[in-house]
Image 1 (cartoon, rainbow, N blue to C red):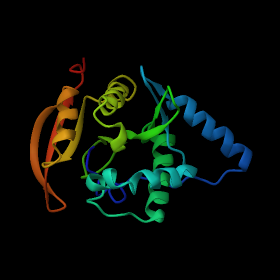
Image 2: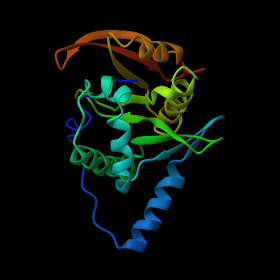
Image 3: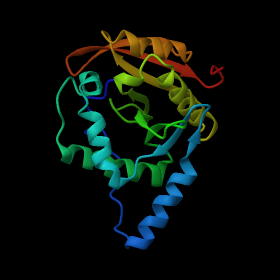
Length: 204
């Protein structure tokens, strides 16, 4: 999984959504889901909505996910609410954010993937996190590949970056397996962080 200690902070251009009536919100949420729904062979990727903060929170306090996503810290529920609010803004305005990763066969939520701002880059980075029970089965690769393709084909990105802790070898394997190349090493939040990059046209 890609480390995202600052997922809650680095969002300089996030906007707040205008409150809607209940019926309007339901229609709007349905439109967001349908517009940005992504299907792969084994998975369905659907956007997290603002009201999904409890689901998002439960994923992020899972010991396996929080080890690298949050340096082992258990985040507050308010943090998850704020992230989901910003996520809704991004999908509405920028056509990207964080997607649920759901197994087609069982309809189980197994993690998340998407695009998010971290270290003041010009564009968002690839992010992925899968519950331990579902790791080593290719789901991180499959979901992330779909997001990379979406980034290039729908958003017209020219490249995409992913960052991971230097110690997180499994996440690095996923990045390399996606065709991403080592780009640089930097200290972020007092930890050595490796950056991987893929250019448009390099995805196979």
